[in-house]
Image 1 (cartoon, rainbow over the protein chains, first blue to last red):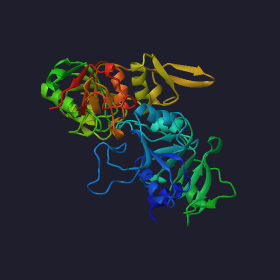
Image 2 (spheres, rainbow over the protein chains, first blue to last red; image 1 turned 120 degrees about the horizontal axis):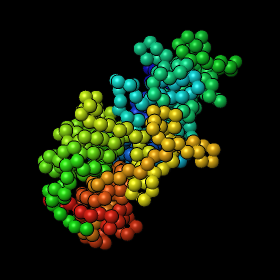
Image 3 (cartoon, chains in turn green, purple; image 1 turned 45 degrees about the vertical axis):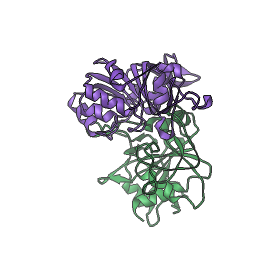
Image 4 (cartoon, rainbow over the protein chains, first blue to last red; image 1 turned 180 degrees about the vertical axis):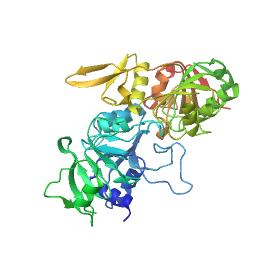
Length: 216
Length: 215
């Protein structure tokens, strides 16, 4: 399995039937592909859709039915559409059960930075800050390192998305949780040792005795 | 409410005007109004919208034609021209979290001074803003936003100006429609009064000042 598949497969196991879930762009979008057959999860697109389905078959795209990136999607049976105030009322108001977002850095207190690199990449935060503040559970899907540098750091040097700690970070090496805002190793990927995770991680990790293997 | 040609509606917008524009990545954007603004060459505009789409689409056309002086938006990452103009200093860009942006516009249209939100507390977004404590939690005060013109695009309009939207083309449109001093609406279809059921009207006719006649 490549790193993205490991991450998306593992995160899919966190979802349950009937949940309202918001997936960010990049690896988070892949999570929808790894749900158990027949499990119905409500996926929200923040441009105003619950019940977001797969990319339409050729010739079936509708120009007024898109995801938050403006790409054509389908709407599943039971879908609903609404305006942006309702969409963010769902997000900030605690109605979204899980959001899965990409990350640039997460610090050892669980604080996420994922919206800008000063001077280089200033796309705007879109809905990310509202999602981290308001979703019941926040899961970060990202590779453990970028250009050889750990993305799980002692302290973020990139601008924060929110001061609310995330709940879970899933990388191709490990699952890390943040009980009481303390980075705690929960699982290692198959074939990866605790020592390898510690060596690849800049942040200080609490390592309990019961670290398990990532179920995939 | 008056139904007028697009040329006449856009002629009412002066250089330097502030515009609230509906749409999300070009979906549900009043494309004909945008095209006419470019044709008439309105300058120094302030645009308040979710995003600036991509070059050549929706608000992206106003950016490419260099008609915009200031943008207030939540996301500009998919329009390289917006980013270039921002980096070169030709365009002022104020980035606002999407949920905060839509609530500031809603407050503007609903007669509120602003809203209190947790979004942005402890981040770069809080700089220069008032904070208040309510029931033991600290919120940012995000002030109301309005504009001289709201440019709205609906799926259906009736002859009186009642508006209904479809699918993900609704987005910012009904909120924006409440927050413009002058509201200019266009629609995919203009239909007889009564065809939109009262329960399905989202923007009531009295809110709309001008409806663009379809060609």
